[in-house]
Amino acid sequence: MSILPTEAPRRFYVETWGCQMNELDSQRMAGQLMQQGLLPTRDATEADVILLNSCSVRDKAEHKVYSRLGQYRLLKQKRPGLLIGLCGCVAEQEGKRALSRVPDLDFVLGTARVGELSDVIKRRRRGERIVATGFTDQRHYEIDQISRQGEYKGMVTLIEGCDKRCTFCIVPLTRGPERSRPLSEVLREVRHLLDYGFREIELLGQTVNHWREPGGQEDFADLLDAVARIDGVERLRFVTSYPRDFTSAMVEQFARHPNICPYLHLPVQSGSDRMLRLMGRGYTVEQYRNLVAELRRARPEISLSTDLIVGFPGETEEDHRATLELVEEIRFGSFFAFKYSPRPGTAAPKLPNPVDDATAGRRLQELFRLQEPIQLGLNERLVGTRQDVLVTGWGKEPGVQKGRTVCHRVVHFAAGEAPVAPGEITAVEISRALPHSLLGRHLDAVPVAGTELASHVERHI
Image (cartoon, rainbow, N blue to C red; front, side, top):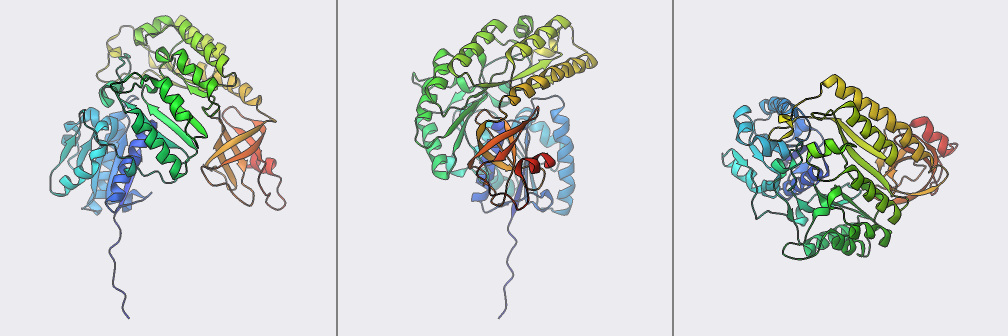
């Protein structure tokens, strides 16, 4: 009896840079490719389709993208049928220029056209090189086409784009104007994720708390209330919130619903009112302080993170000291701090008095040095407590798993003889605090013979 040869399955490779919105866009594209019969691979050299889902928030993003595309072009010499697509924010920014600069690039897919990937690939296979960018009123968004395998949280887009005009930010150009999804559609997707088995839901938007019901009166506070009340939502998070638009009604939801996680990312960008005006942020430091105080009254255990920019044009040492003082006062659980990066199409590069790179770098390091003991001190408060940890996967060392607390802190613990599946919630007693993570003893674990769990973790972190 002979065995007939079978054709090897076609495969795709997606490389993702950037934020949660990009992560979800990659899941959407992967789902469409899987519906066409392609299988994912972690090895770009065996792929039949390669997608580079790009981010343009930081400086020199385009250089990084074209460098990577140059590497992928070499693969095409070995696999002539390989399709290469540039997607995401740099794709939206570059458009036709990308096709001109990279002769072997097959298509360019902008942020608002992700749902058209299947059609774009069909057109390319018929011989057309495509640039699908721009922002249309009609956008394809099929929740059944999203590949969510292996994820520990279910992400739901509430609002796309941004109507703000922060002088440093390219997002309004690469993501387009704000467009909210209907509440009924959001609730249907959340229930779909719960049926899929997710226990944590994360609501996404560049300005997530600016969501409004299209043609209706409901705002983000109403949406939070509706989602939190759905049976099965054990953990509810959302990013990114804009301070000026965070109302008292939204704050009240933290006190009303225990399943809304006591964690909030609330970008302040600077501790100087003068810098905030130059950045076009639309709020003052005092208004930010008042919002933080209101949040902590509603949920005393809440952990806050933020974004900070140093070296913005015109920033003086006095402005920088104001930022340091705010960080010391607020005591953020974590932050993301960057040197200012000029972005094409934004207003900030035209401002006078640019800050030299060496000064910006020194200021950035001063922020990091200030923040590390603050984070360590906040983490030390959790030593000896029991935390419910949502397992996200394995650590870098064998036998060590990792996960996140409800306040979004990373916890490492020894797996024992029966590892916990990603997406499950398990009890961990915190035994030691580090500046950027916690070590713990897995309370539900069956120990590996001859191994004491806490010491095992500490040896491997």
